Length: 200
Image 1 (cartoon, rainbow, N blue to C red):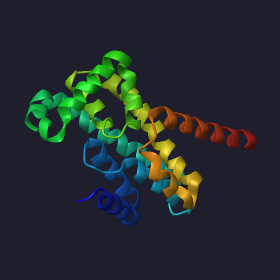
Image 2 (cartoon, rainbow, N blue to C red; image 1 turned 45 degrees about the vertical axis):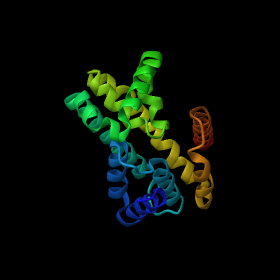
Image 3 (cartoon, rainbow, N blue to C red; image 1 turned 135 degrees about the vertical axis):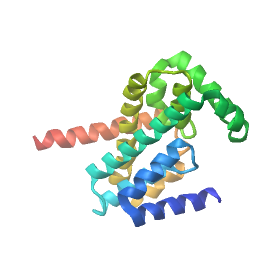
């Protein structure tokens, strides 16, 4: 199945099954299936702008889906570790990704779990690698779940603010570097803070 077909299928699932479709799509996407998570959440933000979905519920479901997906990846790494990599690693390209993530852990520490969400194809490997290294679950959860919340609110807010224009940012979304994405996320949080402050 081509990438465009997968995208259309996932968006159709969310359109048909709502929050349940969002939750399971994110779980499977983060565990490792080729699901366009950022596109999915931005589309849900668009549905929020149309009044079809609730912002708070969409954020809660997206956060829960990302947390569940990362936790499953962590457990897989913890329980099966390198035996799973040796069996399927070459076919899935896991070996190279894990080596890269291990290097990042040595350089940046546990914050890799937080920023890894913003790097497609890497986020599920950060959790899996944390499991392999036997990182305490409480430490993994602390850094991973914070990242999941920031990641979810960023892309849902993108879709909400852009409304009918959400597809324009999607065309170049995967070309954004981590730095640019963080800048955009910061702008969104500033906008929301100012909007909240004016209501006080």
